Image (cartoon, rainbow, N blue to C red; front, side, top):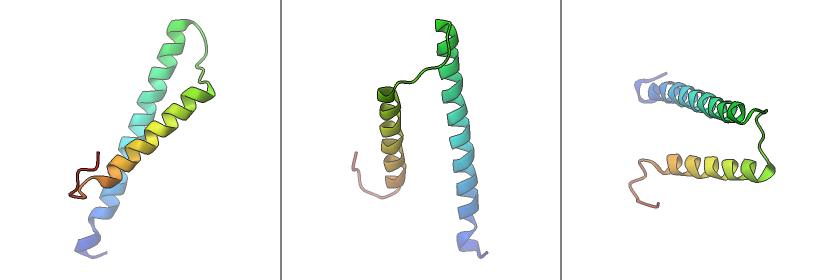
Length: 72
């Protein structure tokens, strides 16, 4: 691997670690909310759809980072 591509595995590893930690934090908050209500974690289809759309929007924003254009 030449020097120009040495950053790619590091970027992927950091992204994977951040994604795993973010997912773990989200699951922890979901469980904590369910325990406070005295039940099991429940997501209805509407909440799942909202979360999915938020994640897609976040991924789109990340993909546009460093593009040099402000497309927010």
